Length: 375
Image 1: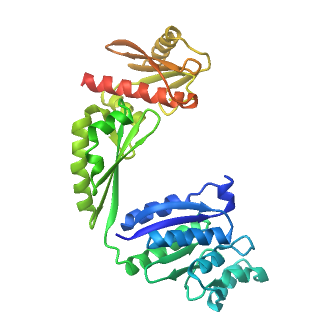
Image 2: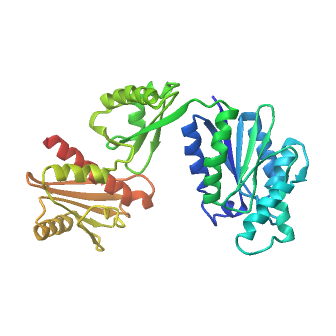
Image 3: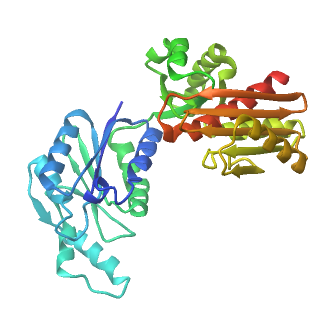
C-alpha cells in the first residue's frame, strides 16, 4: 500500500492566524485513492526545518505532499527547502516563468523582478502548471519517493491536486485501491465500556476499528481498504453488524446522522411536535425547532414549570428541558410526553466548559431511548 505524509508550511498557521484546511482536503483525497496517510505536520517558514521535515517524511512514506511557501517573497522557502532535502540546487525554468508572466498578464500587469523566484525549482523537478495562480508547482522524484509541492491557497491547491496530481499518483504508484470509512455514533455508554464490548474488533487489520470520544457521544470508526467500493462496503457491513449486535440501542446513527436529527425523526414518525427549554446550555439545543433559551438558573422545579408552560403554549405533544449548573457540575432534565412526565439529574466530572454540550447530548439520548422503548 502506497503511503504518504503531508507537510503544511506557514508561520501564520503556527501562530493561529489562519486555519489549515488543506490537510483535511488532502487527507480525504488520499483516502479515496487508497493511499495510507502516516502523519501530518506544520512547519514555519524556515528552509532548514522544512528540509529536515521532508527528509524525515521521505524515510517513512512514498509520497510527501507540501502546501504553502511557493510565493514570490523571501519568506516563501519551500523551493529551497525541497532542494536541500534531496541534495540538489534550484534552477531557473523559462517555461515556468512564462506561466507566471501569463497569469499576471491577465490582470493587465507586468511581472515584477521578485516574482522570478517562483520560476526556480529544484534541479530535475517536474513542473506542474498552476492555471489559477502565479505559483507554479513541482514534483521531485527519487527512486522511491515523490515530493510534491503545492500552493497554500486552498482553491489553487485543490484544483491542481485534482487535475494534475491525482493522475500522476495513479500512474506512478499504480493505485488501484480505495479506502472507505463508516462512522457509528454511540451515546449512553462511555468510551471505556464500549471498548470492552468491541475490543477484539479493534485488533482487526482490515477493516480497522477505532474509537473517538466526544462530548456525550462516542464514535466507532470502521475503515476498509479494497479494490472496489462494493468490496469495501461488504467488509464494513460485517464489522458494523457485529458492533451493533453487541452495543444494541447504544448505537443511535451513522456518518452524518446526529442525535438531534434522530430525535426529530422519531417525533415526526408519531406526528408529534416538540418544544425544548434550556437554561445554562449556551443554546446547545438551538438546533431543535421551538427551542427556548432562559437566562435564569432554573432549578428542577422551575425547569419543569417552564417546560409545562412552553408545551401548553406551543401545543406540542413532546417537551424536553435541560438546566445546567456549572458550579455544581450537574444538570437537571425534564421530559413531558403523552405518557407522562419524567425528571432526571446527572453529575458531570469533565471540564466545566463542556458541560452544556454534554448535558444536551445526554438529554437528547434520554429522549431517544425513551421514544424507542415506546415502540
